Length: 388
Ligand SMILES: [Ca+2]
Ligand SMILES: [Ca+2]
Ligand SMILES: [Ca+2]
Image (cartoon, rainbow, N blue to C red; front, side, top):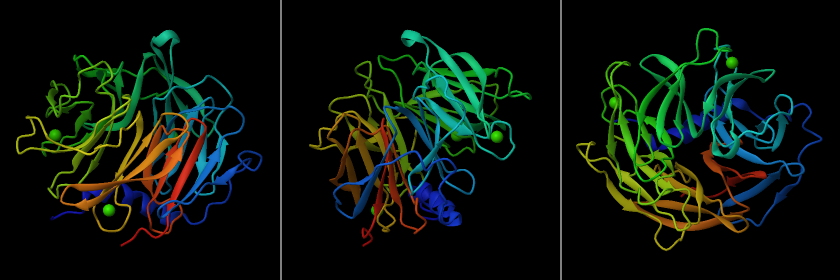
């Protein structure tokens, strides 16, 4: 193909960033935290290490930020933490305060060069919650909106406007834009409301139709950007996984599997006891359904909340990693890309459940590793000799 392999995009960005970083010193105040860096049994080319949280502190959301020179892992829940990988130390950010839910993402809101963090304090009984941004370096909370409710959250620039894209109530693509004075409430634009039998989950930006305007991929759909901000967006189905109320809750990843110019879409159902996993090739006319290639086979994936795609073994073919969130015995599964759209699955570890996973080089040796975040720990699987 005539351009850099988009399937390697995430891994390469993070690899470059980690190389610039060098060996990280432990963060101040971290020595008293953490812990039990327990190595579990080594499996299939990976050295697993788990860093447990102190006490009964819970993580509910996480983001691995690739912007800037250093890939940084934020986790939030009972406390907000910034992690230093690969040594597994972390420091809490800001004062102990409200518990945050799963939704959140980093963004340099005030353009001072330091990444801030957007998080959500969920409402009572499923009601709307308080969306805030925590301002680095003191991490003071500033309210964005008191009527927010989302799991998926993404910094985005749409038609030159910076902001945060969320899937409000798992059905509405909504775009919040920081005002001139970002400590004031943020206005938002409703981009599209999706009415199907299922909640929608998973959120990505990519220019699907190649017109230069980034489009939105979420749940079963992609939403086509207009040519100007004021004009309406249009919805097109990628697949029809919306039979039940949670069928379309998913994680999405882009990877060039078919070898075409456009990255293919990888999707996994996060909220199903026996979940589908597939990659979808974009048809010549992306307004029709995309070509589905199922990957779960006989795996019986149980609530696979973690999904990442990227080349783990140096052969330029993007591999896929899926992690279950099903309590003790949850599997981390590598689907190694054998070429021609074929994947071979293997279980490379078990965890107490993962909420998120990424493929990134965390120790600067140019070999991508796997980072996983669960409710009570952060895990690394450092690749050793997978290159072929
Ligand atoms: Ca900032
Ligand atoms: Ca577009
Ligand atoms: Ca590969």
